[in-house]
Length: 235
Image 1 (cartoon, helix red, strand yellow):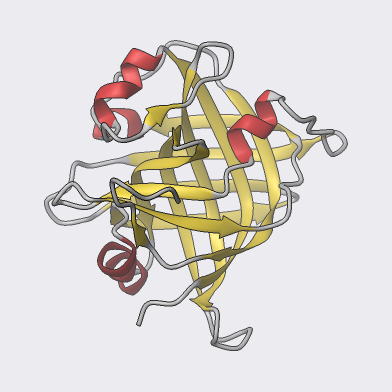
Image 2 (cartoon, helix red, strand yellow):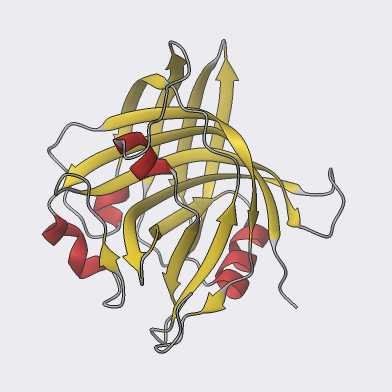
């Protein structure tokens, strides 16, 4: 039986590009509505490391680390806002296979390094998944200033306060999982992205808009098991 997952998300960068909703719409399942802020849809590249990934019933300290990089957008379904992932690159082969089989998420195996030196995070990812389009990311980031006051209705809240994700199986069944964690502690960032081919790997042109960046030291998270969304069901 697939149970909920415990995860610790650490050293998180939210790199967010505004785009016209028509850019995102063809890449999102028909059952989902593309969510917008001031008329813009958003594509977000999110590098971080997962620490202590484990089923919730396994004791603390028995989990595995899982560096990760994802490309996502923001959606709603029946009044519930959430995240839709286009791809998730991760270091661990077992974690990638488990996420694909049990959580129906588009994970890809990648070689990833994350190093922290003097508070600055250096993150590099190179997708090695057999048969998949190549995808590379390299950059560095560090928090600047005091913790941000993330107000209700702000862009920062829109991009980060998401407590479920949606995914679609190869048979086009829509599924979701609930995500539980405390509010993200967010900071402005000094961010340098040297290489990023995630957009092209997922069928997007690289946005020409200026990105908005946030950094978080992380949160501890519980993800529910994946559930199918039925046509007559409110989730």
